[in-house]
Length: 317
Image (cartoon, rainbow, N blue to C red; front, side):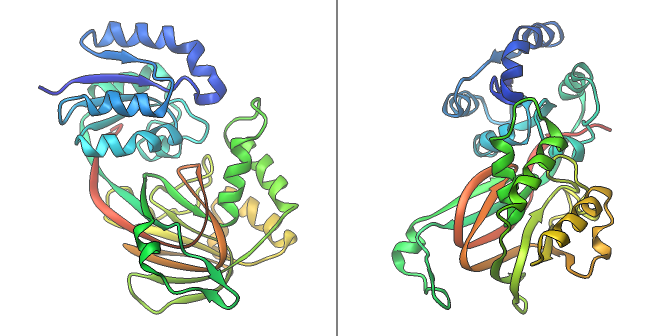
């Protein structure tokens, strides 16, 4: 028999969900008395609870993009359905699922009653042992290949400037939330502006080579707490979108940022958007990566692949 598990991340929104937990638990009990309620303090505890569920259960997730990302491996392993009640800082997945802007009580009702759909999942394969030489990436060795790890994502893989911004946002002032927090982090990152030399291969085609500000993969139309960066992206079309911006100075970034916020950035010749199913990236120097707003570190080589219809989700009609 499938089960219903309500999980709340007490650390979401700077700990605000811990204070709301009794109210959330009462609402779940009133609407779904059969549901199991839990407030896991650690990721490991949440994963253990999800893994104990019968296959095909529904998990009510109170949190944001980062919360779901950390629980994603267990959700997929058990063929469970993700029913999101968005209470995070970025909430770009919630936007793609038609949940953003709903009151949490409305989102909870949707999580309990709305039908299920399948959405695509991205995976980034990290080659942790690869190193960059003076003229580019060194050849992979057997130990490099053995040191790979795979990290799934639902909304975005940020590569370059936006990953660095995401790291700053994670450590930003607690009183700043949502897009203002990302704007604050962007202005801070401008002081240490960098670019990266990348060799990018999309779907096995001719490589794209040059220095970039960012080269990110998007499954959702927005990232960075609502920036409409990939207007053609869909979560159920078996592909994702590569957003690439060439290297530029501080004036160029300051000009690009408001265009990203308005969704007019694609008229800039330095910015491109193209669909992909697989991606290979080699970096001349380590480039920072982040998935769904969660910082991973800096890497010289990685691959991205799309897993079509790999997760069941509840989506607002």
